[in-house]
Image (cartoon, rainbow, N blue to C red; front, side):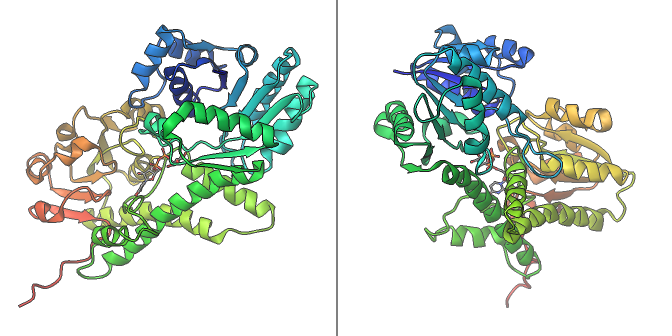
Length: 448
Ligand code: UDX
């Protein structure tokens, strides 16, 4: 069994490191943010992810997982290194490669001190060309060694879906390996064969730029799928009798479409889709190609907020002075992440227009406070959130919100107007209140 090191302990690094350690690998993981590293060392993940805390504590206690604050130290203690640092977007949409470059420098310095052939894989999302044109030369410069001969290199995209990160890492749909040479590809392939054993998913072997592109293609496709169903939802709304939920249910049966990522609503947010699509557009434009479809995917997503604001305005006439209850802050259920969350965008616009906001989320309140501070009130339950509200907006489809009945809204609110931004409720069961949603046309006249 190989000794593995991880450089960077964000969601991808930490979840993957813990999964390797749980499978019995000896893992050394480095996080240069000391406060974060101490917290992780104490068995406390800096973000919520199902089963992560338990697995982290177990692997730290059985000493399969060691947390350090020096990238060099981690590399020196391993023969396989996975780069899992963040690649945030700059103002112009391009990637900020500082963390990738710094990690590569540190790994290079460690390689200089090592005799054995190190295997390195980039898992951080980077635009095509970055691994070969930035990571490889940096590693070579700081190690004084030659890629393909003295060390091996791959790009291996991650498809971590927040809220499902551990399960997804243990059972991915597929693995893509972009190898510098055959030996590099084989090394990573063998590692995954050993990791997944009889549950080995399909492995796509290719060159490095193709593997880098696979990651963007995957995310662009999924985001476009959501924007497409939202486009259909908007057309349904203008078609008496039409219901996008039924349309999605039907077309999902076509195996070429499949039923996933067809949930119409407020659109997509999170740490990946917005950042990756922007970076993909910036990358394409640099090559002289304007990816109009991906631009439209983003624009369609932005419009979902605009259309929802119009709905609120139509109901309340004036937003100024109105009390609005926001159910759900996280960008999706089962996470405490509010990066690019739809909630933040809607709340910001409502605040600008003079509304008073009370919000409730089972997990994401503390992260929201870091962005919105005390500009809004934070309730400790859904019912408390709804109290005396003039309008409620359901932004995140948490399981606990599914249990709310129309009476809960009617009894708690000043005027029971509900904008269901995630198609969570059955409109027939919410007839007693003013129920407005996305993708539902006006009811048809009863047929005689
Ligand atoms: C995504 C990709 O799924 C993952 O493979 C990649 O590595 C990172 O980006 P994540 O951001 O964790 O993962 O969330 P995901 O489940 O993809 O949802 C993204 C957004 O789309 C959420 O805001 C979600 O609410 C929204 N969404 C998803 C919809 O609006 N409708 C859907 O049908 C599915």
